[in-house]
Length: 169
Image 1 (tube, rainbow, N blue to C red):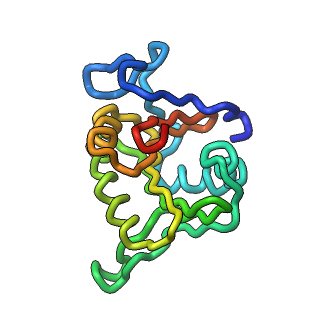
Image 2 (cartoon, helix red, strand yellow):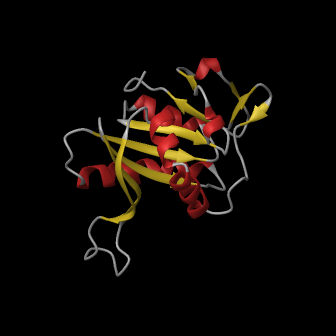
């Protein structure tokens, strides 16, 4: 991940060309990758590059992290609800939902998931983040329309792109 360098960020939908299916096209390329087979592969990639991930993408300094952090095991069966990745850093605590979706609807469903998880953790300084391998403009527009406190980040093995909504521009 050291090759990530400066992040590609954009502020408005007008900065992008939309493909018919709602995916984003930048420089003639759809923002979607098949570099990871499963969400666990993305998680392992982030963990193996944790220092760089926290430094370059979160712009913070790592203190600690937990994978599959349980929320409330009693509510929904033996596995319960779990946050994919919980990162404690110098500035904030980051609650992260990871998606390797086959369609954009999985990203939109992640909005409800991450808001629900964020409600459970009462850290005074926290950030909710959805990381995806398939960028869906409808997800970005929903986050923006409702002014939701969610960072929406596309990730592949050499770069990331973050949609900057009203809350994080």
